[in-house]
Amino acid sequence: MSVAIVTGAASGIGRATVERFVEHGASVVAVDRSADALDWVAALESPECVEPLVGDVTSPDTNADAVAVALERFGRLDAAVFNAGVSMGGDLLDLPMEEFDRALDVNVRAVALGIRAVAPAMRVARAGRIIVTASTSGIGADPNMWAYNTSKGAVINLVRAAAVDLGPDGITVNAVCPGPTETAMTARLQDAPDRHDDLRRSIPLQRWGQPHEIAAMITFLASGDASFVNGAIIPVDGGVTANTGQFRPNLPR
Ligand SMILES: NC(=O)c1ccc[n+]([C@@H]2O[C@H](COP(=O)([O-])OP(=O)(O)OC[C@H]3O[C@@H](n4cnc5c(N)ncnc54)[C@H](O)[C@@H]3O)[C@@H](O)[C@H]2O)c1
Image (cartoon, rainbow, N blue to C red; front, side):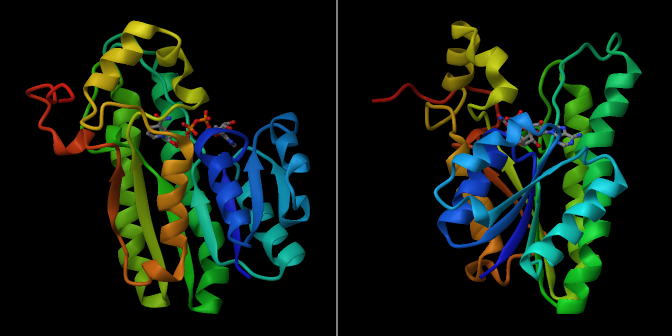
């Protein structure tokens, strides 16, 4: 039975990933900032498969604790999903630089801390799967999202660098790049019908993604079937990044 750490596990893509791991018989250390937000774990059919861990991923202690809990509670560590993230909009000239720092702190630096925390145990095992939730917003840029765009672009190259450095130890490192997905992070857009629909039209599949569709790729990358996938940056975006952006996709026939 495999054991995974999932950060940002309280909601959206992280929660869907924990649920999918558990469906596949894995055990999970589920990390997020607030205990209340992790309450949903108790309602699972097999809550003993999930150990909630309250902590801020920007702290080295949280990352060390997650590894310690995986090893002490479940006896091994096979995969780590660094999924916790924050997004912010704001004009290039006006956004407070503290917000830029926050984007880099949570979306990039915390992932580096996480990789440094899990790699030693994976090195000993000479096996391990690290999956990072990046974004299509790290492949291209969006209007008024420069801090988020910068952070997700940086984490994509962090994934490549880690894949190169850790590959010889039998550890794979890959990034999943979701397109627009209906989660708490995008609630503001979902609550504005015009903006929700406008974005929907820019997606070739003509609909938003659901958290379980991103979780499916994440758990694939953690599975034996992905044994030769390393350093890959994989869009799960309904075709958003396939479009140059110069023209809108056709309307459905
Ligand atoms: N929803 C989308 O459209 C979309 C698109 C592309 C990428 N993503 C990425 O997917 C990942 C998951 O986002 P989501 O859409 O599920 O959003 P979400 O807001 O539902 O979940 C994010 C989770 O991360 C947690 N988190 C944030 N900062 C943290 C910290 N410092 N320490 C611990 N936990 C922290 C939050 O509490 C929350 O539970 C993020 O990295 C996000 O950037 C989302």
